[in-house]
Length: 198
Image (cartoon, rainbow, N blue to C red; front, side):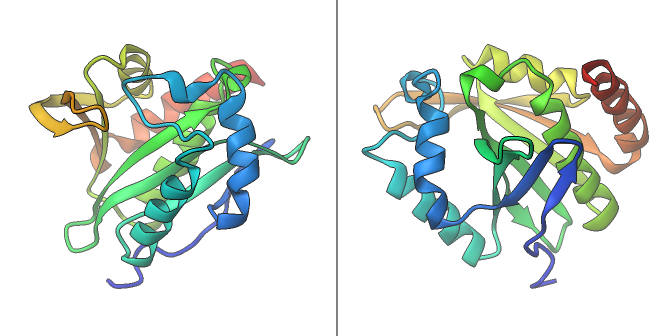
């Protein structure tokens, strides 16, 4: 099980998820600059001052087999438009989380998130044989909560005062999941939504 979470490239249509590298620093900063996403107080999108830390943490989690971070690339323009990752991987219990996801503002509400979630969920359930895939977000991140519900996840609960953020604020974390038995209908729904954008 030590090789359960192996590096992989996932592609569908004009979107490609490739393994995050330190060399993506400049491209990630450019994507985050589109909308100055680092100003969102309820999530961590890196700016010039903490991009190195963001990448170091992601690569450290990958080295420890706890995560598999990706950059999201628009194939037509060969442009990095965001990032996402598998994280909190539990190989023994075949569970993981999809998170640390953000997209450049001009790419939000374009169907990109649906495509990325489809690619990640398909890999998780069909290749990694996951029993469950989790999603977690800040209580105040209403857009994220609604997006998670739209892809077919169900809310498991709220972890009250779950974490202390960089500003010392206690965060309530909302937990969602999709179970392997739910994947066929979730897949059907995601494909339907993807067809609407094509």
